[in-house]
Amino acid sequence: MMAAYARRAARRLTQQDLLYESLRRAILDGDIVEGARLASSRALAEQLGMARNSVLYAYERLVEEGFVTATRHGSRVNAVTPGGGAVLPPPAARSAGAARMLARRVLELPRRGTRDGATALRPGVPALDAFPFVQWRTSLERAMRRLRADDLGYGDSAGHPALREAIAQYVRVSRGVRCQPQQVFITNGTQASLDLCARLFADHGERVWIENPGYLGARSALLAGGLQLVPVSVDAAGMAPRAADWHEAPPRLIYLTPSHQYPLGSVLSLERRLALIEHARACGAWIIEDDYDSELRHGGPPLPSIQGLADDTPVVYLGTFSKTMFPALRIGFLVVPPDVTEQVAAAIGTLERQGRVAEQTALAEFIESGRYARHLRRMRKLYEERRDGLVAAIGRHLAGMLTVSADAGGMHLSARLDAPLRDVDVSTAARVHGLHLSPLSAYCLGGPDMPRYNGFLLGYAEAPPPVADALMATLARVIRELAEGGG
Ligand SMILES: Cc1ncc(COP(=O)(O)O)c(C=O)c1O
Image (cartoon, rainbow, N blue to C red):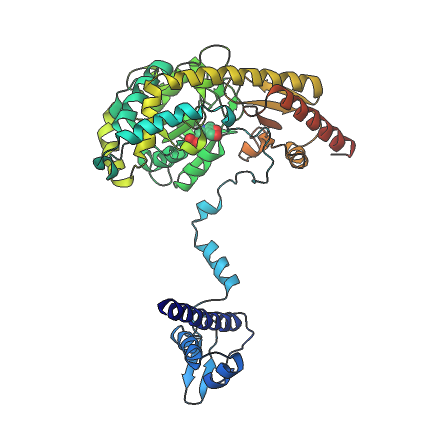
């Protein structure tokens, strides 16, 4: 009996809501014009075969929201222009208005590529099918078992102490970073670290030097953080500021990827690393060292981090587990100099909230148990094989069309397009065949005196050699067809 009543009530509710919604839409779309009189509630109820109360309810809502005015002679429709009585503008005007409300710097953000299903060779995604699920699940289960009620509250904004400790230990050994656990702050990945850097280490409108070409994620975070981007060119030895730049446009922040320049792949020379520290110290700038994939370097150990080259370098070191574990983990970290540790902890304490205690303690355990190091060894070998496979396939199918320019590390290589075509055109044509080719030109910031790059960033982590071979054969066909069709 109760259920039948509830069902009837729900039906009535739906009917009166539907009537309200359709009248409101008709008024907003101009189908019922200003001044028109709505049918009487009795007549409309009869016509629609619904209860008069439902019609009255719908009319009352329209009156309350200013779409309709009730008079002794019936209900009249108001104007829907601003000030004309109705509270909501029509939908088209509403969305244009919303876009205008976003900050201009946000509207200027570079766009990431479209997600259209073309995924082969995309950079930045590790070999997810080779991820040691079972071992990771073991660490997660252990972490879950150890959770206590206390762990479920607001944790330390700096991140779980066990993970800070494990990371400090790990980067000291593997990257020569000089740090104590209290200098390590856990974030939701490098993107979040960059966002934090823009807020913590620079004031609105201050200059940040960025590599050109450079990482779009950094450009976005720093631009959205209200900073002024100053592109600095890159050559075979990494970021190459002119001597005059230090006087003419001294930076507050310098963002760079010294161990594996993104996207070109060069390594910042030791000479430049030392010069950078000296100049940054002299002008009071912070160096933001994005060390996103140096653990995966092939052919010899990577150069140690800039952070660890001397005591008390003006460096904020950024690390991430997106490449070595998996991107959805969303765990990264920053290491700040000891003299600002307390201030950073206080600021982060008010700005951030940390969660995911199980994942953080699981990751600490994964590192400390040696499983992380074993996983990295396996991945390094796998990526080296896949890199070799891709380089060989390029040699076989694309001689004279594409030249590998840097392939010493990580999960991607950069290659120059030698055919007389634009990389964006080749990239667009290749998408149809499922190839995701990141055009190098997309990473460049404008300016007539800025060098342009024409080529691709090719991610090989997900492409075993036979797959890479087939993909390069396809790319060769695409390039030939475009070249024959006049580009
Ligand atoms: C230069 C660079 N830094 C950092 C990252 C990792 O970012 P996140 O930790 O936000 O996944 C990437 C990923 O593609 C990258 O290319």
